[in-house]
Length: 111
Length: 116
Image 1 (cartoon, rainbow over the protein chains, first blue to last red):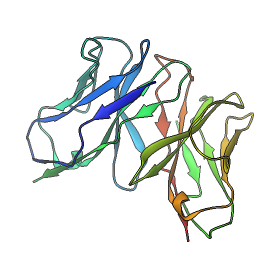
Image 2 (cartoon, rainbow over the protein chains, first blue to last red):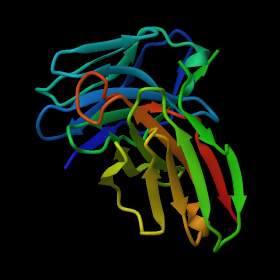
Image 3 (spheres, rainbow over the protein chains, first blue to last red):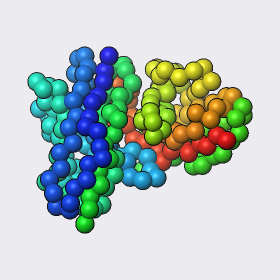
Image 4 (cartoon, helix red, strand yellow):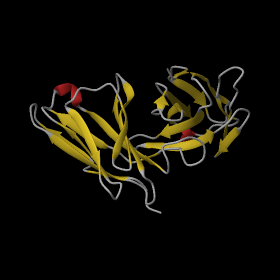
């Protein structure tokens, strides 16, 4: 079946530090991959997506590249801000099957 | 375009009672999915509806049920509430249930259910 593994948090960084949150997946076929972000007291927001191998999703300074050879979709940002503090979820969607989410990684950015 | 709306936002119920939660998807979206989010179990899939038909179902007991109306609005019902049902219930809508463009899900703010 489909599954998503992502690094456990919490991750604590100083403002302007480089961020990487690892995500790997197991799936049959050609899934679409997503990163969602959840701020306190809110639902999940779509951060970026990639629908095929070698696609790069990007939004608000965040990037992730769909690597089929390593079954990975790592999230990166060059310089984090305090406002990026949130929980980040890697997710996989496959045709005819429900979305699968990773456990989430809590990010805290200190000023 | 208005986002996904969920009502009510907060709910307190007693063990043994039942509850109905409502979700209105983004206009034009025909697929609605429901999730339960708890600190211990994370985000767990409940079910997905498309064109009033349940397409997928997660591993939850029969006390959890849902439906979708012709206008794509969806409701989920939990009967005989247990303390462990306390959670944030999230609804998400998408344009299609397929793959590729249009498949990404957009979430509502959730309904916080507390069972006492």
